[in-house]
Length: 498
Image (cartoon, rainbow, N blue to C red; front, side, top):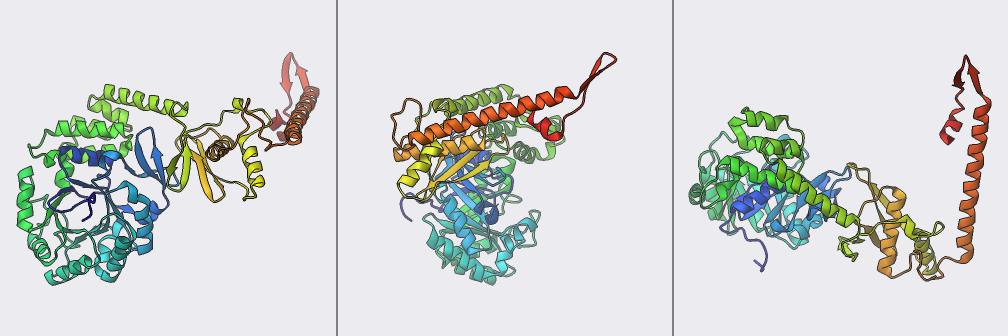
């Protein structure tokens, strides 16, 4: 395996778990000694719609859906250890998603073992086990299409022969490893794991086999991890529920008290602005049979990370963290960070804002960019603007000469977002943008500047005349009765003008 590529030999991994394998849990597992951490299964259709966003406040990379939900969040701390698991039934879509996340993760994995309906519908998850041709097509497309290792996770088939045959076929696609959950598709965690099946697979192939499914009977302590590995003959071990219940199971020095583990987890959830309902869900999984205790009831009743923090006595940590994040946000918004171009995928970004007071009333950066494009005989700038749901802020991307530019900062209006994008483009190109005190570039001629000013002045005079007429009409319909003033409402169009 090439230098720097993730190895799956002799490792202990945090298994992919829906709603559990988010960033706080993955970082916690790494802190406690896990070698590799898998994210929760993320569906290819949803991920393919995401935009990769560098979050300078949290110092993360976020993959954000069109509705502004963060589908996947990662950071530098886990970059060399995190495996992105996807649910897919389509080779081309799988490749598109893998390429989207390729530079931010250590490997990509295809879920071929989850028996739940949300995974199997559409032919994903364990449904793939009955379609080996599609399995092979997906894995070959990924192996040849990305530069990072590709793996998959399966369940065992009804017979030992079928299982070994499938894994041998998987091996021939060039994957770096295969994880085997030692249960049949219709079996659940209460059923014993079939170690003999995993052992037969491990003996049949030369790639690393990762044993999974031992949380019920086999792995209660850190020492049990090695015993489970020996019992299955596997190269490595992957833990799901045992790690979910107490992630300090990965500690070679021994597990920590659950209270300490939950506190460590919650601190990461606060630091990385984790969704409060996800935070609550993970804590409730750790509490298990204590979920109805006073602490459990307080956690269940909480609606925000602030309220969850109160339950654990971490109010001060929460307050200090929020202040630190706000200070970082303010520094970024004020432009105290160096305004240097940064490549974000195929977009060049800079942390700049459009300050209206820095430009004459009749001049805008968009005007200068338009004139420059005409002068250079390139297509007129095209603007694409999105709005963020949580604060209704705007961010715009402008395409000029087949290259894209945007500000990494969000603006209060669509117009300001477009102006900020134009500024980024102009500064990267080294073209004047029309600021006050800037030497006349000749891009916008004197006649246009004066015409713009005269047009604005005439528009303002017309508006004032209209308001004056409306006020005069309103005063004519006012009547006084018994000393009380009753004003008849003007027509709707006039009310809007007022």
